[in-house]
Image 1 (cartoon, rainbow, N blue to C red):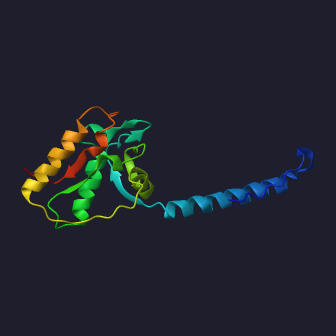
Image 2: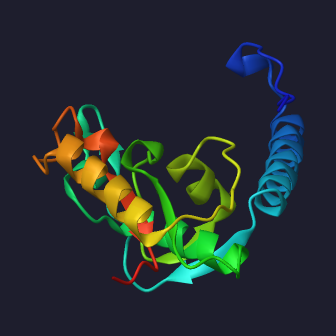
Image 3: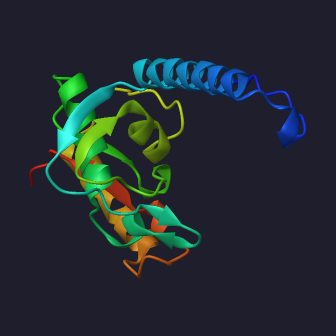
Length: 160
C-alpha cells in the first residue's frame, strides 16, 4: 500500500493539502481492507473459542483428543460422505486458535497450513485395530510437551 505523504517540514505543509492527502490515504486503506475481507471470507461461526493448538513446544493434540482435530476430522467425513471414519496425525495442527464468533478462511489455513489430500481406502477391522494399537503404543499419552505425541492418530466417526 503506497501512502501519498510527502515529507516536508511542518511549517511548509498547507493544511488543506494535508487534509486532502489524509482523506486520500484513508480511502486507499478502506479499499485495501475491503479487498482483504473479500479474500478472507467468513466460512462459519463458533459459539465457543477454539483453544490454542501449538505454541513453542506445547502441542494440544499430542496428549489425546483435541477440538481442532475434531473439526478437521468431521470436515473430512462430511467432504467424503462415503467414509466410515477419518484419521490424521496429531502433528498436523498449528495455530493460536480463534475467538468465538466468525471463522474466516485464514483461521483454517493457520490451523492446518499444509496441502494434504484426502484419501479413501479400505481396511479390515483387525488392521484398523492394529493401526490404533500401534499409534497409542508409540504416543504414550504423555502431556502436551511429549516428544512422541505426534504419533497419536486423531480420529473422527470411528465406532468400535
